[in-house]
Length: 545
Ligand code: ACM
Image 1 (cartoon, helix red, strand yellow):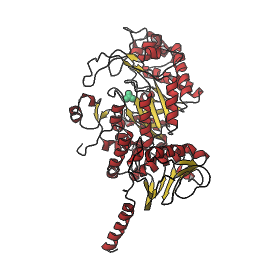
Image 2 (cartoon, rainbow, N blue to C red):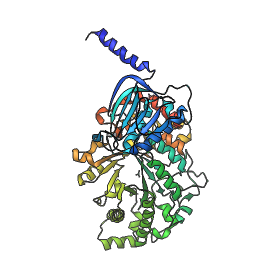
Image 3 (cartoon, rainbow, N blue to C red):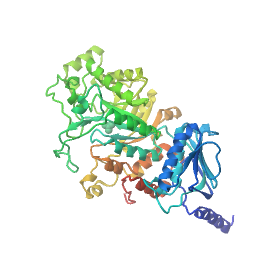
Image 4 (spheres, protein in one colour):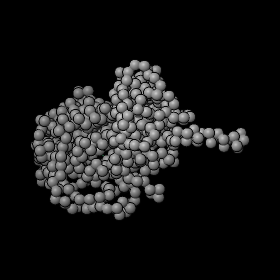
């Protein structure tokens, strides 16, 4: 082809985009397939959103968003779809795109989203909103914006079914309305799993009706280290917890955004706040036993005692937890449980002898297996951090790998499912710029340590540990961890999360072969404007980092 023909074709393409005064799409996470056409669709005061029964909630969500930012009435309608409207439907949806897949067709005279489930159409709406200017995510009406979409065809489905974010509210309590803001930002990124880390040595955050002291005592501590000095005391009482009513509200809020909440109740370690509330469930026979809600960070010696009374207590707690969270998975922690107290406790040693357990690691696995059986009896499924396999991995448990990929390989070989949450690529409490750069900004920029820049997060391939396609299927997906020692409020949580979660969302959604960091960087500036509109306080990536 002659050079001038190529130049002319290029000009035509650019002018077709320019014709609608809009730039090429910048959707994050990138869709599976996208074909850009010519022309635009314009939302006007006459635009309506049509839906069928299964798509009504999604249609409502979209119409409300559009009403807020455009100020147009944007009515919901049923029945015959006419041109200039938006249709969200299950009819003729492409079933091969799976539960969360969808197609989105924008033509100059109408928009159609098709999906086989409400979750699929919801993900389609997230893409649709990202085709508008970033002001589509504003909290109030925006004047002077042309509400236009490029003509485009999208066919999309996620790579992984577990696309998540973990929030630790144990170290610092984050109120429910701020948790909802994190959930909104998750929805923007098509994330579907919110792992709520609810109990810690430093605080118990969920009301349990049968054990009121868990929150009367366990939710409060007398002091915390201030930002910038981990060995000092700020002398301020800190704490808080969610009532069961508030938990239900957050669960429903997330469900409306097709996000499942997985509660985490830590055992046998990270339990000092629970044991401070009910000392009788701790190893009372060890020297110096005097549990307190902890005022320092780091691993603590307090573990639950392997008493029948402790199991009854934990089963009661989990019964209330299961009633609040419809999630199939219940996270029981299992990480960083020092074995010192069990070694010192004559009672724990007796249990080991009675049960024929040779090591304290085997005692931990016995403990976890019992809890796993209890959860199975309630039709739930146990997930735990990778230490749950140190004394033998329960057959049906799902493992969340945080320390090293070697644990994933071991679990995969045994046939267990795995969620990849390794420190190397998903720990969002690590510095995202050089530590000295961050600390020069002020003590409140302190992170736990480490260095995890955006590009490294983007480079993650959670399936790299799989040795064959069967093992690849056992890898459910990945999630980012926002640990809370250096995260005192939602603004800091957002600063640590974004845009690294934007990168991780693409890791989890977009096929490996379609991913390209330079293209992600091309789309990122517009995406950051979306976060600005939503009021999300993100870290501004610097090219030199
Ligand atoms: C962990 O970081 N202790 C799971």
